[in-house]
Image 1: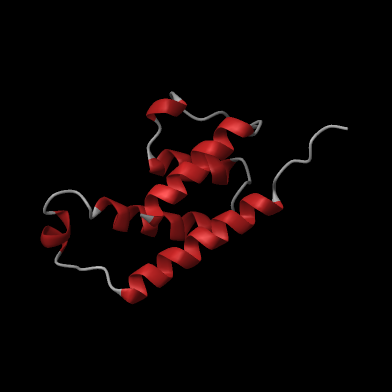
Image 2: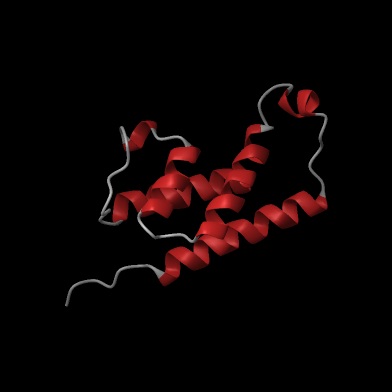
Length: 103
């Protein structure tokens, strides 16, 4: 669920902000990986948030049928804690880099 939250926040940022480097392809078809890279390229999120966001993306992808079983990994409390901290870091970075409206 945190992966979906991360994706939604990054989509909103991409829609609401002016990007110095445009996203490759269509925003409506952008993957979470592309959204993470887009946010980092435009200096909306720091390197640490970018790296950790890819981990959240990996865990988000485990919801696909049998993916968790094939990976031989089950998410637990520590996994959720890592993902929560990552989403918080992204939100903090986005808040810090939020452009102020023109006066």
